[in-house]
Length: 285
Image 1 (cartoon, one colour):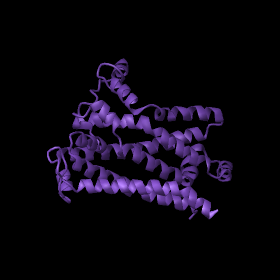
Image 2 (tube, one colour):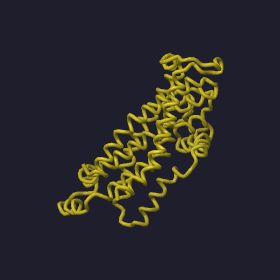
Image 3 (tube, helix red, strand yellow):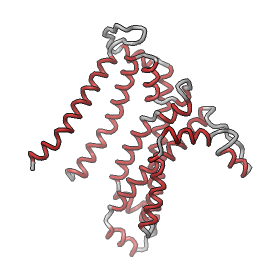
Image 4 (spheres, one colour):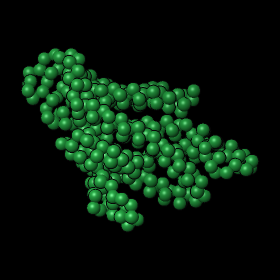
């Protein structure tokens, strides 16, 4: 049995070794001063990172990414809990499956496609503003000032990624011991009490997975700000988009430095979640 497990894990170890090699190579490139203006790079050490940190667009990209990520994780988890709670208390499995597919539908749509769709919806003369005018609400000039840009991006992220949270919270809710829930019902507990006092406290695994995935999806967001804002609009630029811009303008070492930082931040956040998940669900500790 152990020999079979070792054989099955060999492809994973090979892939991990290749990935580590690429990451190490990327870190090495980030320590050079390689760009279009210096095609014969020399060792620059941490000077590349100092240059990156002094860039105005870097601070913009960091700010935008932090806002996108915090909003996606917070709002996604809240709506995920509420959505999963509603689906959990449905008596019909067929209705639950249909409604769950509605939540998951955005995940099946290419991000470039729904980015263009949302761009039309945010048009000042049509889309959302058309509905607002019908109900005599004031028009909102979307995607122009920083507050409306943040609001627009958060709306898009919420629409796109909340289905993930609903899926994992619902799976976690369904695994809660039914005898505990039945005992609470006998004592007169309503659905609200059951959800927040019994089901949710016993579903922390759903919160762990949902938070990790929402963080990854929002932290590496690229297509939506790039499609809507374009490479020349820094007002919604994310860190991953800035990596692309640095590389496309042939600042190779700066793009390597930033991609190394993004990989490091993602690893620092995700690896503890992975270790916790292994302890709780694999090794049962």
